[in-house]
Amino acid sequence: MFTKGVALEYRALSLVLLSICLMVADNRFDYLRHARFALAYTALPVYWIADLPARGSELFDDVFVSHSALVEENAELRTQLLLAQRELQVLESLASENSRLRALDEAAQTVEGDVLSAEIVNQAPNRASKRVLINRGAAQGVFVGQALLAAEGLMGQVVEVMPTTSWVLLVADPLHVTPVEVNRNGERALARGTRGAADELELEFVTQTQDIREGDLLVSSGMGEVFPKNYPVADVISVRNDPGQDFAVVRARPRVAVNSTRHVMLLIPPAPSLALDEVDVAEPEVAL
Image 1 (tube, helix red, strand yellow):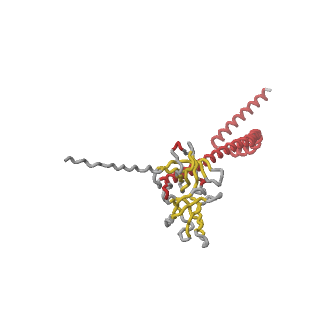
Image 2 (image 1 turned 45 degrees about the vertical axis):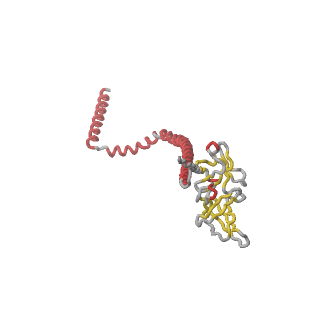
Image 3 (image 1 turned 45 degrees about the horizontal axis):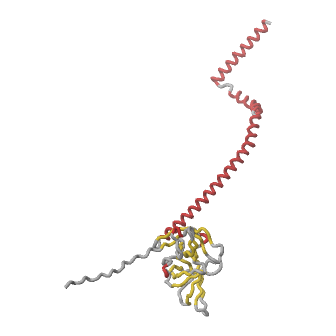
């Protein structure tokens, strides 16, 4: 037993010394690099099998957790897109409104006297009566007969005044007559609204010899001192001369598109200047 034990001790000591020599040789001269490289290949399946549970867990998390995260992210992005589209529409509306207000301000600079800004808040339900309701009334100094203007042209006259609102008769109404003249040559005429749904004007008492052509711009003539002079009213769209008739049939389309116009202005005529009363001065009596 003693001999056997000594042999085992020598054998263990030999293995230890061999291990130390191998470690020293590998550390200094890297002799076992190829052996380690080959052993790594043999150990690779073991590592792969040991890593299967972790890979399965990651795959499960990627499939199910990522799907739910994508659904939530998609819903959030849809909400953000809707909000962004709404903000874009508001910005476009504000830009369009700003452009219309700037055009209205530029138009106000071309007329004499002051103007009162207003907005169209309603239209007459009856298409035979072409009227609009504005948000200005007696409280703001509006009066019957006051001219209503838009940036594009003349709109009409106030026909009914209420405390905070007023009804305006449009130039396209058959009851409204507007004194106009051709901007090209100064030919004068009276423009009356036509009956029916179409927003058109017809020039009255235009003789066959008057020089009015299709495409001419009609402006207010200033006759009657109700509307400002030379303010755009309508464009001539047709001229028909019938030799059997005394007058030509001339139709025009108003410059203002009522359905797409909201911001308007009321013309405030300048106050009449007060003339000084003549004072009779008696000659002093001369004492004799």
